[in-house]
Length: 331
Length: 265
Image (tube, rainbow over all chains, first blue to last red):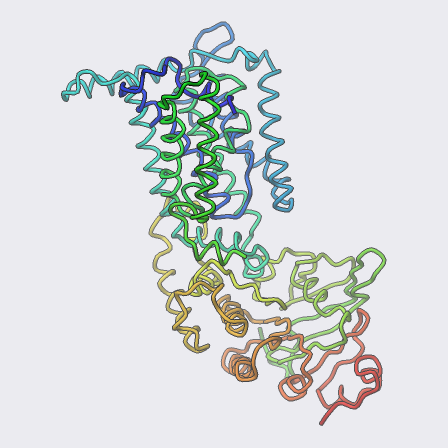
């Protein structure tokens, strides 16, 4: 579980909790995981496909962006802003390639196949040193981003918040995206397209018998989810400023699932709620003033978080914003 | 389709359909035709291959051999959604109500020609589908009304009783504007009043909209009194077909299906 620790911005110390910077960086993580888990919500909550490889799409996008914008000798590659849509396209291409064979599998086998694929991506990133620089990772892809956020910060300073934290622009961009995407996906869910996805979740054969090409819709769902993973991936590596294989362990996907369960299945707003609660508990528990070693505190934080999840499942199994009827009717 | 030349032309024909599962030939060269605007019953003892035959001609299974033609088009081996979109729509023996969706959404889902089911339209032309959606909703409410389900429109389909689900499944299949409806045991598990209503609907749809029906049924009273033609399957083959009174007296049928017993009058 300690693999999660590198995700926390470097420089946060135990006494940093009075600092607004600390909570802003928690907010950034919550926002990134919101976007990440929106994709899972689309797949799991609204299409009924158990995508356990979400972190793999995140890795593909982050590496594509970093590789495109830098050169192996530390120079500049193509324009950062052009690399973003290109990397999204690469990720969608990868999702379609993965989905074409694996979405024909039964649900549980699909889950296994996607975990394996995501791990393959990470292991390839670790070993294809010529391309990815191996465990050392890739740096220096975010200069254009820094110029952009400097602009935002100058603007905020101009309107009067003179001591705005350096990371605040990233927080702002992350949450504008998280909320915008939540609204967009909620709207899409209320279209006939969203209705077909839900029908596939309920009973794929019934949807097919009514003239719906279920396979095509599942591919669309997966590709859209991969797009969300890509956006989350960009923000994720911009936040930590380097791209390394260790950022893309399966635990990231599992944390996404925890967010999903906490917030409630089949509700897009639940994702943001779940993510905020999860990260507030997890990071807030750093303030525990106990006579324990630092590693023991770290372990205890996860124990308490998981205890929260267990209690939630016992007393509110549908999650915070999930619908109980839907859970009961789902057999 | 033209119905010019006097008698009823066949809307559907199957020839030599074969499906083998391991060592068992579940369907072993089934050949039949269904006349347009008929209500045709498909009967046979358990294990005769009736449901497998349905799965084969609606694309859920791929036949090992044989031809199936619907309204002049070869359909064997085509995927289910293509066959459904051609107007040949089926229901299932065990109802497939979309439990966690409201009844009205179950209905509206089935409507054809909805541009809003296309992702590109949803993203780039967000108003392209609203007019069609309003039409579909109106049609769905009318149909629900005629099936006495209108008051349940906003309930989750999963809360419906078994009989109501059967009605919903039929109503939903009708939303797809079928020319040929295949019903797998539509009367099974529903009370006689609902069953009678379902049969009335079939008669009305045939008369008013020219829908053709092929239905699998075990209730001989229903088969003999409510179908124009009866097709009998046994051991994966069609062993007889004809009008109910002919089939009732057919020696092979009595042997294979009724084990020698006399069909009650």
